[in-house]
Length: 79
Image (cartoon, rainbow, N blue to C red):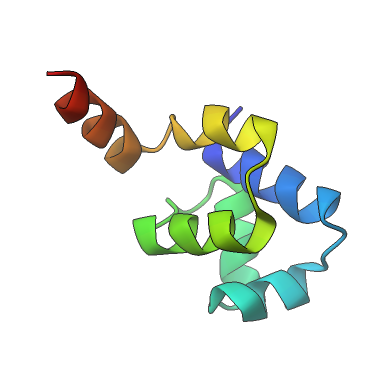
């Protein structure tokens, strides 16, 4: 699962519209749509806001591990 797929799944699971979620995340609806579709990379600050907004959902951990910044952090912690 990609980061974008995880974001979309979390939004739908929480029964939030794209418009409402984008307002809560501080991005334009079109931008959130591009994150969810994988057209744009999701910035770390939006990922953090999404975890706060959607909560900890089982599939989010898998999706977040795909983000390059998260992978770098995990690699540094393991070293």
